[in-house]
Image (cartoon, rainbow, N blue to C red):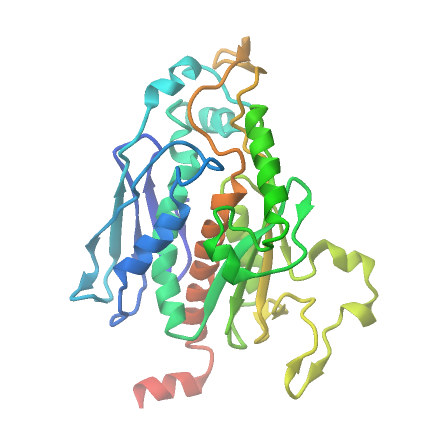
Amino acid sequence: MNTFGKLFRITTFGESHGKAIGCIVDGVPAGLKIDEEFIQAQLDRRKPGKSKLETARKEDDKVEILSGVFEGVSTGTPIAMVIYNTNQKSKDYSNIKDLFRPGHADFTYYHKYGIRDYRGGGRSSARETAARVAGGAIAQLMLKSLGIEIQSGIVEIDGIKAQKLDFEYAKTSKLNALDKEIEPLQEEAVLKAKDQHDSVGGVVLTRAKGVPVGLGEPMYYKLDALLAEAMMGINAAKAVEIGEGVEVVHLKGSQNNDAITPDGFKTNHSGGMLGGISNGDEIVVKTYFKPTPSIFKPQETVDIHNNAQEYNLQGRHDPCVAIRGAIVTEAMMALVLADMALLNMGKKMEHLTKIYN
């Protein structure tokens, strides 16, 4: 499936080394001011080649809006956007034309479809996430008009954890780091792995502020369930935590329950959701990214004929995918919340009477 969402939907297309990637965003209400500079700024945050902490592949990632926008506002029709690939080096992958890269989707894609697009992973490449960021930026513009803001940052790399959470600092950090004091240690870990032709994993913290009570569709389209699905759908994501996450097993009920006062919740162990519905507190999600499988060390594998082979990677790759993955988590959270906001519109008669009476 290449489409995500029910009312606010995004469909992406394209391959890593194809002519272009892009998306079609459907369900955007007419009259939304489309800030193209904001969309481009989000893509610029995700684009590769900005520092030595990222892949050397340099892509401008200039987005072009093809439809659905007139005189700067949405028309209510599908918004199509395209990003042309301009810096492919497909020959870097010619030596693995018939080999499966350990840790990649090559093996499963080939056995599912019977076709081997060896050029950087084809459709399974994280290059596709640029299209998600473009679509997610549209969702963020809609959410901003509702007073909802989404932020993200690196909370952990290679086991080195942030002690402070400064989302404003993360916006200026080339590592997207939340802790200015811990950032040098995290950067050192990334560069050390890179020098050793290896990679490291990381954890991204994503939060949404200003979310009203009531978003989420029990029983089978719960807000927390869909957020987990959205984050797990990002390349290299291997685990997701909502609120206190796995740490709740170490707490008593009396410790984990968020006391309610006339001014709101005293704590936020729930991550801003109860029963799959937003409770008005901050939405808090952690996404765990595995070490980049593209490493420059000899590895054992097999070819498409199941013959044992030794594999040596070429090309340009991120030593830590979590760094740029942080921006993708924002996009996915925005897509979920935009969808939930539209779905929530018809849940009360008072909502309908305001529109039709």
